[in-house]
Image (tube, rainbow, N blue to C red):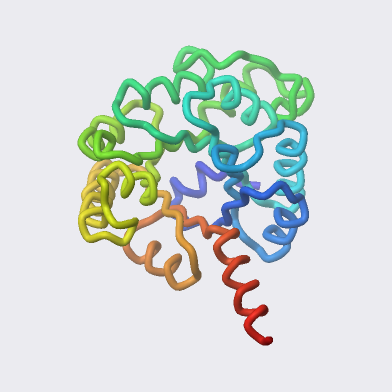
Length: 248
């Protein structure tokens, strides 16, 4: 299977689902449906490592890559999810270049970072991958996405995006709206800030990751330049439940 990072370099646009409810079946169903990847949310969902490992394994059995959104300032969790075989991490609440560099530092092996080295986890194929191959795979395949979710992050977007080792950026509209004191993510002021960040991402040739709530919005995100789009599965399920419940 071609690594997710290479697929993005080749210009593929990849579609995934955001899963924050611990359920291997949801991950498997996404794989059967043919999604490219799953984003497992450990910031706003459970971060128990054994179920997380099961979710990663289930995704990979069905040919899906896995990104994991860790919590704020959780370098230990970054190492563990990568050791379990995730293709990369999405790190929330990045407000400046220093925080972006810290995220890269936690996710990458020396000399780029200081992630603890081991080949005996899933990522190292339980010790059957040589140290040299494992290091090469880290350089070739590990993805680090920074989340910009505040006025400070927007102000420092150019520095964040240009931080060595940051592969792409995801804007968090809900947190950004709260940071701005705006009337929700659809507020024109929030949308304007998001557009400015997206312009910086495009100018510097980084990958843009968008979170959306429907297939129509996914198509629009791709059309406007996103390389990765992830659909909020909880939103879709709740809309489906409401529609089904409306029959009576």
